Length: 294
Length: 299
Image (cartoon, rainbow over all chains, first blue to last red):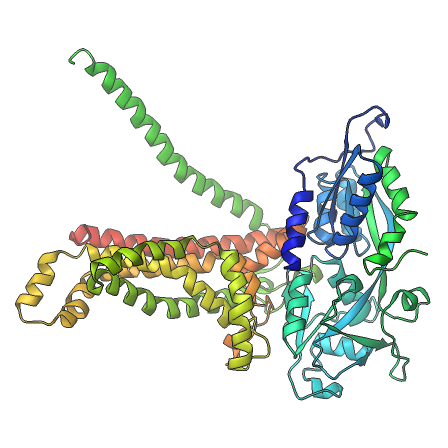
């Protein structure tokens, strides 16, 4: 139900106006007299609800600005910005050097704006007795070294690994910071047994119904029918649950910044929008389960 | 009347020319698509040696381009789907054409067409919410998102094609054959299985091939229910484990790739493979039809 409503809403929000509206090589239009300005915004599925909430609130204050928001994954949004079809890409990871290079090849100088923070929660089925894991255990589970729940003190059941597709910024972040434990020389990968689901809702649905499942997702996506596992950096603890407080004091180990990328320095309405997000817009961040910048 | 004739034939010729252009443009389109696929996909083999492309690990964002798990995944799901769909489809066709009373047939035929019209997302949704939990709880698989779940959904998608083509083939068996069989003292049952069905054999092969082509190319439903894990489906329990198909891979990954990158080319190479396989299947189906035509069996 929830997924359907969200999808319908997305479709409503999508307008078919294309083009990178605010290009660096274009002279800025006078903001006062021009007709409705359109900002195209696409990318991270983790951020799509947050971006929609921002867009709605901003359009109420500035009715002459139209903002359309779509998801698809961080990689998809960045690719769209590189190809010049959107003005702002939402990304739950930093742009890769290759992406920056291909943007420059297209004459676009991407500019990074940090807009919020997010904790990644490790989730299991509520029937699973496991309530805490170390980062090393999570890594071993997702590379396929640990394959049964009994190996980490749980029931004698197989472990079913769930992940987003590789176009998801959450997938990339999880691979680098959890599976490889931040070691850039590591070549560990997700186990080939990992189910790659096309959406966050897919993970939510499988975790809710399958007692064997373990998944990860942005804190904003965790619902009451999933069980969040406390995570520790060291085997001795402390085991910390993700929350606004534990992200701010950096005790929860799996937290990351969320970004918006623009083609060059933002101008006009877009500049106004990004400055609004960094100030008043932060109030919405906490409401949607993410962590504000300050 | 006579005065109008030259004008009419000029119009005829114009229409004929138009039809010829329309017909040829279809062939042209197919050729152009294939050329485009080759042009976009073949360069991958300069960057990824064929041996690596046939490797067992698919993780393109980290430079692993082994497509074997995807190829075998597609094969497994399709073959099982066909194994499920063929007996069901042919029996349904035989029932509709040979056994059902008139009013049942009038009900069944539109029902089968409705089945063909169900969007694949809807079937995928059905698979996720009904078949997947059943596979997990009843069959004891670790997860319900398995090759079997995908195969069952695909079987249902292939069924309408198989039924209607097989039914047409049975319909085309001359009545004289059936009459002769019955006149020789064969029962209705013997007539159906020993005379009518064998006479429609090539049409039935076509039905199977077209159903198979439908199954191997299907994307959305498969992506929703097979779990998309790029594992090698070689263990005995592979049917009850997740798989990743070629189509799901292309659909899931095409959105993120930069134009012209190795990953982009690798996805096009997978497209070439899929195109060739469906082309071969359709060719087999078509040659079965033509062979039968020459013998004068089918219509």
